[in-house]
Amino acid sequence: MAIDAGFLDELRARTPITSVIGRRVKLTRSGRNWKGCCPFHGEKTPSFYVYDDHFHCFGCGVHGDVISFVMQSEGRSFPEAVEELASAAGLEVPAQTRESREAVVHARSLEDVLNATQALWAQALYQPEGRAGLDYLLGRGLTRETIASFGLGWAGEGRGALATALEREGITPAQMAEAGLMRLDEEGRPKGELFWGRVTFPIRDRKGRLVSFGGRILGDGQPKYLNGPETALFSKRRLLFGLDRARAAVRAPRPKGVSAPDLVVVEGYMDVIALHQAGFTGAVAPLGTALTPEQLEVLWQVDRAPILCFDGDAAGRRAAVKAAQTALPLLKADHTLRFCLLPEGEDPDSLVRSRGVQTVAGLFEGARGLSDVLFDLLAGGMVQPGPEERAALRHKLTESAALIEDKTLASEYRRTLLDRFFERFRSSGRGKGGSASFSGGKGWRDESDAAAAFVLMDTTRQRQRLLLVLLLRYPALVPDMEEALCRLDLAADFAAVRGALLDFSAEGLQPVSAGNLRRWVEQNGLHETIRAVMREEDGYAAQQDDVVDPAQLVSARTQWWHFYGLLDRAQFEAEVERDIASFTEKNGDADQWQRLQARLEARERLRRGSLDDSEF
Image 1 (tube, rainbow, N blue to C red):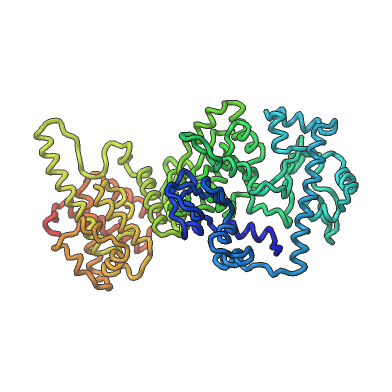
Image 2: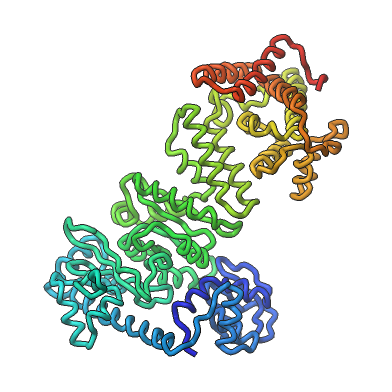
């Protein structure tokens, strides 16, 4: 049975081998791979290893991919195994017709065209006509061994030279066009060679089969780099330059204590080749496009946390933002990314040559997680932004977290990003790195001061508890109080309640009421979290009504700001003055005035001393 090779590759890419094998074998993590007891021979010590695309037993020698595992474990024929896996992956097996069988043969013929071209170009690099190309590669620090290993070549200056040479082997211009070596005119007829006067880079698929070429022009011509067009063999969205080598390097057996190389995504051919030559054999690169979802899925099949390395310039940072936004909807608890942003004006190739292997190794070791670097990428170097810029950034942060389909992970990202936001832009420079956190705590010098501080801390904790209780009773207040709430320096149990309130608010459930909050708490198993601050007399358990009394909401808003002001009077006064100025300058609307009015009333009560904790 002849099934299109492209379909089989798609089937393997869409079928995680660990999931299929894990249904029959208990697997445990072993570095970047998995291991378990072989299902094909009795053993007590695991010697059956599962890699990103194949399995191997070091005990009995059984070996294969996901299709052969189904065949061997379930006694299925090849067509039956393909049909079963395709059905699970939501794919339809192509009908077996004379045309489909001819298409398989035709694809093999295109590989023959590319291999013949590769042989000619690799040889030409060492001929007088390719001297300029060889000098360029040697001048970039590549050794002759590396040049030969990657199969680099030279496409001559004459536009018809390749066609003439291939014609002697029985290859027609039409075949060259189908293989991506010639341009087509408006009527689909071959009209000229695509590669000429360029250093050539063979592009291989994940199994090492030649599928296309890239080329770099010498001098000032444009485009500097050129990739072959989409063909029956070549899809730019699904391939990465150097992936066949990187996969082999990452999964290769190695002595105990020796770790596998990092899977590192860089921006260009020369970066990949220079890094491989320097020993960073996990380097790959996209093919003239921004990183695609399909490429990310391929990367995660090899490494759960690949490193994305971007050049140290504005374009590199823009590319990092785009890659992060592409990755966010695909993130899972065990699939993430690390980022390495290089020094200004540098790329991996130049760094290896100018600063050495150790410098590059240190940069890769210091790669930061996506959650850590995303805020810096989106903030874009803000130092003292105005209210409008801060509001825009907050919107971008919450919008980015919302892209993550895993709700639990999205909640964690939102919380982390907002924590960073309020930490950096906390007014009066307080918080981390400032003079004191906004909690009411103070330093002390002797035992009497320490005793007074203990009482103060106890009062502070009570006021913070009351702030949270008000929001649990009236969760509709959370959006208005969010910035101030996140500014508070809370103990771990209180911080967990704050996180739950923010997560509920982000869900956007309607109506926003205590009853709905209680049901959400039950559904998400957060009873113990809420019990950390609630008491019987707080009446939270009785709050079942989904109808919110507007008068009570107004009163609760004022109470909340009053307790907030009790925590740090000077800080609260400064914030109110700032908000008054902003409202006046921006000519605020009625809703903004209502929110400001609650703070003004709370400030007046503080000045009169007309409300204390006992009145709550």
